[in-house]
Image 1 (cartoon, rainbow, N blue to C red):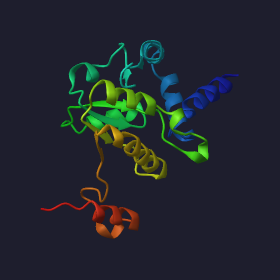
Image 2 (cartoon, one colour):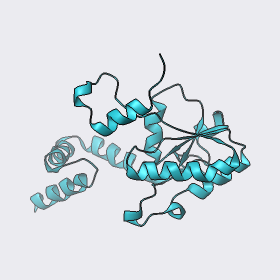
Image 3 (tube, rainbow, N blue to C red):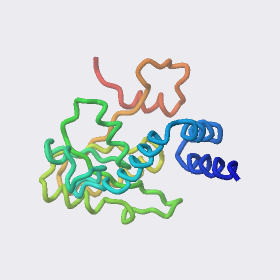
Length: 195
């Protein structure tokens, strides 16, 4: 019977992204071998996060308030458009961006039957008009869906006269040219800048 409880715990850890059986097994044994207090703190933290964290009503970022700290304190004239709230965390590591965000909650993907109406593009249009936004930076992934979404956003914002930019793409800092694929090299060449 005890093996059933352990396997159930392992299976719950396996539901997390990027966690395979061996890692889930290590997590499960860590919980079992650890103190009851640590297990209770862990389960309480999960419950609190589920109960208290929601989405900012302005941008869609994770927050425990109605409007997130970024939307309250930043320059609202520049909006960086991202696919998911977790992308904001990545962008925030840069430290020199002072604008706000707009979360689409997906990208345009005809193969998955997801068009512009299934993501938060209408809300972006409303923000651009209402807040007199000067620049929209599209920071979707450089894949087919991300590119299609970026092109669509640029097309629908063009009549509004707002500046639409895309994150530069190309070779990563510290990498070797010999390991870069043709698409990455082509994009790097296309986005080259004077020095």
